[in-house]
Length: 189
Image: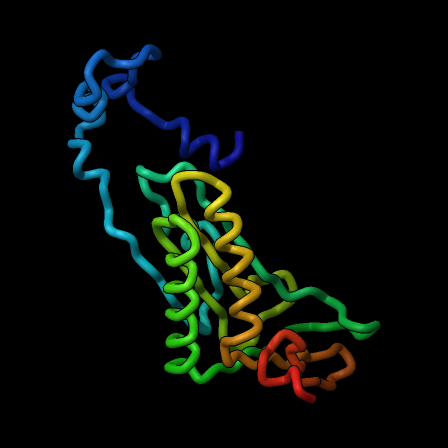
């Protein structure tokens, strides 16, 4: 049994719910020990730039909501190769105040286009070894279509507009700052 199954299946006999629906909606709230109004939480945007290792589980937990049936994730990781060269790590730099402002704009644009509840965008700065996450994006919504489309929009727009610079460090002890072909300021070159 996976840890997800263990967590989602853990309960004690006193709080076990009946298998048939209750006659009155408030019954289920009473069984769960909470009022239906307490399940309403305000939308939030979580933006984080950090040198610390990113946890996919922690980021996904930030967007969980009892009114949502979907949490969509994107996890960008460091791969071990680029154009025939062996990559040992990536190094990210950002002007954080400007990057945060651009990410806030992305969150606002998402909220204009899709009915999402919570958005979490966490990006690693500094050295990111192979297989570790560079970026984790999580979005919750009532239904999957909105959160899936929002996550795709976020990563595509983040790569195109947010001032984050990436350097690839290679096994042969060389490195190369990477030009992001998606950035709007590189389109005229």
